[in-house]
Image 1: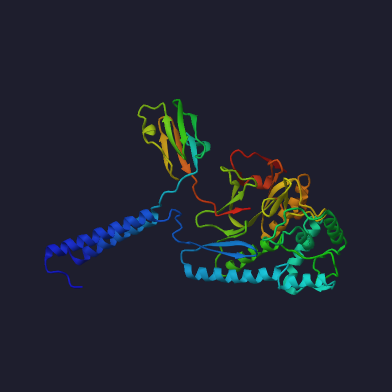
Image 2: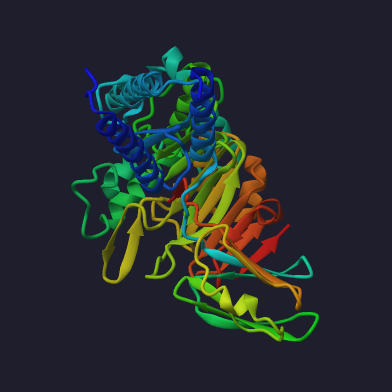
Length: 363
Length: 118
């Protein structure tokens, strides 16, 4: 561009340019997002395993946003493969096993399924059968396998009793087993552990790809690693009976590598005759477990926290502490049917309950 | 002015601009007020709950009013009343103090949760 001849005009243009530049700069400062992340938080959200999964990464200063989005895409594809493998009713590996069991056959557990089968068997034994991945038939009977077709009344009592008796008669799932069955009464449903393990896998995959600061939210199952820049990841726990004022019952910081998983009677349920029937079934009675509204477990792995929160919920008000101990989790809080909170000493030290919520600390 | 002078001025201005952009943080709405007397923590109150809080300082009682997510010194037994004149505070990091009475308040929180377990 050729500058104009007149020195006055040139001076004016120079000042105009400077003034405009400053104005743009200050406007940008004022309108910046208030998180102070400087664009270092990268998030992706998608549907998988019948729920919304959201993954956030906090980038190092030298890491590229587009590369991070590619890594998130890889994690998403990995999760889709994983979800298909563990779907109880689909055409993946677990679906095939279930169809073979239905046909009265003995099944081989494929190598890629064995580690989680093994973990499930161990947790099942440790929980005294309160956590049981063989409950597929009961889940199906109650209709909790199909989000679109919830029942409006509980199933027939005789059908529940028959399913419970069949389950009790089925052979136990043994740790390290490479085969199972025949067991007409059993159908595998890994719904109470696979989502938790999926979060572990995502964190591991992303760590290997060079992203150590991650938070994964798989339908309310939280798994975090590393930090969010200058501070820890900050986690809330939903109030089981939220009011207008109080949606979050408790908050805690995760600094490092941990899962926070809640099992509650509000997740999947229907009501009939004023009674709430939810998806956390007691394998001993075939009925939704009574006595607690919600159980939250903080543990080093998502698989453990997921299975443990289910088993502890089923254990109920009198037994929850013993079950937690048997499963080796020491950071737990439960909300009973009256809304009272009990929290283990190890969790009480680091969790903040909302104002107006009194929690009793138990050893 | 030589070309060198112009270059030095431009570089210095750029440095100031960059530092400013890097260090200047836009305000976030706070969730809690932290109260201190003589520098020692003397209570933490949610800004969501409107109320008056009385606090004993060296000279006497200072009264803080929490209302609509903000807080201010309502009364204080100091002569200059600087604390009362500093008015309403509502941003994370905002602070006010009654130095004669050794009472100070700081606003904290305001960061959203990174996830909610349910």
